[in-house]
Length: 588
Figure 1: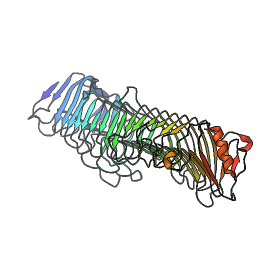
Figure 2 (figure 1 turned 90 degrees about the horizontal axis):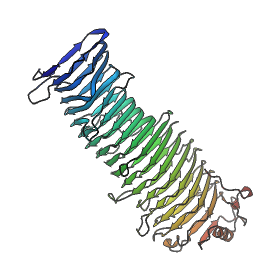
Figure 3 (figure 1 turned 60 degrees about the horizontal axis):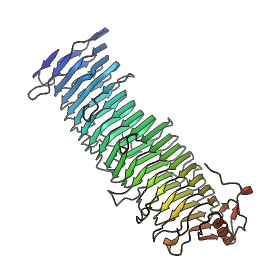
Figure 4 (figure 1 turned 120 degrees about the vertical axis):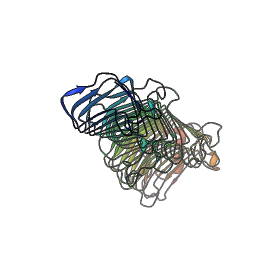
């Protein structure tokens, strides 16, 4: 079947409406519907208000002008397309628009889909439980087609599942902002935002080899997405205002992955995930091809922002990824309420080159004031350079001023700062526990150098009666900047009434000379304040004997380190004391 020429504006080449086909209908002959050349009008297939199954298994070309190439509405069940040869194309309208129609077991399949101009390129809404759409491409960039110059969503997916898009280019989509109020911050929502690919209540989405450029609102936007893969793709220049990200999800669940993908020049965040539901999420960001996983230069905020409230259950694994010039943090994970979160950040390279005015460019684990859940973490084998001098390269911050949540994890074998590069270590590593919650951290085999504005490693428990268990072993802290403080600074208590505790093991570290940058600063400094307790494993001196405290710690770190200690006198808490029975501080 061949059709071309000018059929007339809005006139399809094949139209089936108000038809019942209980036994099913199959159009097996090759379909070559070609109506997208200059001067041609109409074309495509139009299916409306039908029952039964309609199959078009041998589509060679389905091209139209001013008429959707494949339009189906309340059309029963459909199977359309051919993976190796089929092309869907439309000018000024969607190439595919299927709504309230069941996609059959053979799906909608094509090698290539192209739609230029108009509002949307592909629309799928309420298509049933079978895999809905596969655009195969031929394995090279752009071979899956182009969806471009769209004022709205390039691809709009709603109440559908099983969509695979390969090797499609998306230049200049989502050129107008989605309407409020359902487009904005996390509490406002994102269901009315525009994006190159926009998803609402969908499952099992696979995107591969995409190139998304010049989208003024979002690159990829999703709400209620279960199962998501983004591989081998690039999103460049997404957003032009606050709250506009390259990839944004509210309530992403199931297993998700972003692999061998570059996100760059995003206005707000490169990747933002905000969950409020208890259904578990396991998200991996990684690379299998060296140099292909890159998060480069945000204007306002984070490389990755990963956040949960209510009873969200979230896991994040980030490895093998290059982060450069994130205006906020390279990675920030945030929790509140009864969230359970597990975070692994391993083997990444983080730096600042393209944006010297960054506010952070480190790793931050944070919590809200009412956090009563648990966060576990492993931050290991990362290289972090040139974080802002007032920002920590690694900041583990339990901010639960009223909640009783817990942190437990390890900071292992990271290198923060570059020897000989001034201020490249930022403000080093911080462990900060606020309120009645508990934090347990092992900090082992890290290098912190060229640090400023704070200690190389700071440990602080304050604002309540919580507990911070810290084991600091085998670390090298060196080369402080003139504005740096001690190599290691540990403090229990911050304000009047604080009755929390710090348990510390500080042994086999190399810290000599790490306090020189702060003028008279010592290499390590301990402070016990107010009603707090400072536990030192194996310490046998008096609770107010600061000289004994310094001598004891010097003996555990045999590098000639200088030290100082202060205690509230008379001690209103327990001062400096041994752990019960000299037992080790709890470890993760």
